[in-house]
Amino acid sequence: MIRQVPSASPINPMLPSPILPGAWLGLLGGGQLGRMFAMAAQSLGYRVAVLEPEPDAPAAAVADLQITADYDDPRGLERLGALCAAVTTEFENVPAASLMWLAEHIEVSPTAASVAVAQDRGEEKRFIEGSGLPVTPYALINQESDLSGLTESIWPGILKARRFGYDGKGQARVEGEESARRAFRELGGVPCVLEKRLDLDFEISVVVARSADGSTESYPISQNTHVNGILSVSAVPGPRVDPELAKKARAAALHLAMRLEYVGVLCVEFFVERNGTLLVNEIAPRPHNSGHYSIDACASSQFEQQVRTLAGLPLGSTRQHSAAVMLNLLGDLWFDREGKGPSEPDWAAVLRYPGARLHLYGKREARPARKMGHLTVVAEDPAKAREEALSIAALLGIAPW
Ligand SMILES: Nc1ncnc2c1ncn2[C@@H]1O[C@H](COP(=O)(O)OP(=O)(O)O)[C@@H](O)[C@H]1O
Ligand SMILES: [Mg+2]
Image 1 (cartoon, helix red, strand yellow):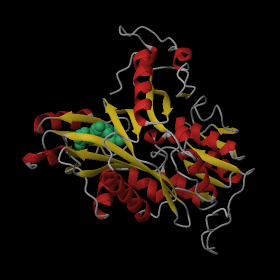
Image 2 (cartoon, helix red, strand yellow; image 1 turned 180 degrees about the vertical axis):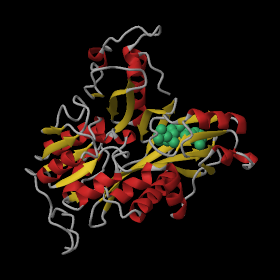
Image 3 (cartoon, helix red, strand yellow; image 1 turned 90 degrees about the vertical axis):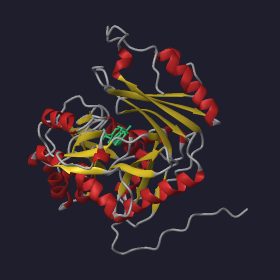
Image 4 (cartoon, helix red, strand yellow; image 1 turned 135 degrees about the vertical axis):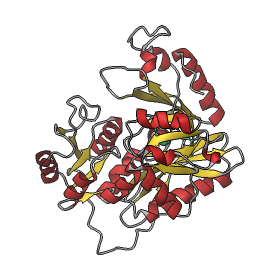
């Protein structure tokens, strides 16, 4: 039998040769995404340096080296740049100036420009609309007076700070002008976007990887449930994701990656309204919580893909070999109903389930709403994965759906 070998992409003399295992890869940020990046990079034989001000951050515990400095500390950046062959980031709020400075000396992906688009909800919306894709109706609110005289149809809304929000933080649900004015002041009077609060049917996301030669791969679509603005469950395949919706979402995500001339791993979050309309919610210039299932359910994980794009290696296969349901493990799990705790959940009982794949991030202190880890339940079919995930959720005392 003749084996099919994927044909190599045409050699582009402008592209640098790949950075091979043994080299140092650098990371700005030391959270759990960085930790999983470091593990994937090390498994491929790279060494990893993390620039992170917190001494015992999740990524720092596994990296070969931590440079304990602020993300914009010139000496820290210089050290990182001198050691590493390429640098990436694990969160979008890294100063764009740091990425730009590093890019003058070594490979940096994604670029400061791509990251900057995702750092500001206003810029992000303009970019998505400019790419011809629909977004939630919104208004830019730079000062309190911008809240008067808005079209009635925008209420009720969600007021979101343009910068530094995550996991539902920096957001307030508002009913009308009065409550929006109060919320604007409570958010500190910073520039905001006001979004119409939609009657969502469900939410999905797509993780894509794009390499410097323009080749792309996309992961199967996650169907996501959020509780209090924080991701709670991702199911892949999602029970509501039909092939047509999947095709549309994938095409939109790849289109955005191409428009950004993106190099790296990018996630696009979508809203699906009750009337079936697909809207782009936001983009994340990095691996995403809703793509964690790929570690246990796909040929190459989103973190391995981040390493491959950074090092200029061929993209890995995104083929899904198992159905998956991912449950986020928040700090609430460490406390009882009366708020007493913390005490370690019964992981031994969880691990009795054959499909349970536990990932804890090594955070010392459990706090309510803090992402402490995730658990992916893999199975041969989606119904089995869901059933086992429900049993484990009941065991842990969480209601993820
Ligand atoms: N305009 C909206 N209408 C309805 N639900 C929303 C809207 N905006 C956000 N949400 C809900 O809040 C979650 C978090 O909001 P998002 O804008 O994605 O911020 P974050 O950066 O915190 O992820 C969304 O996934 C969704 O469940
Ligand atoms: Mg989001």
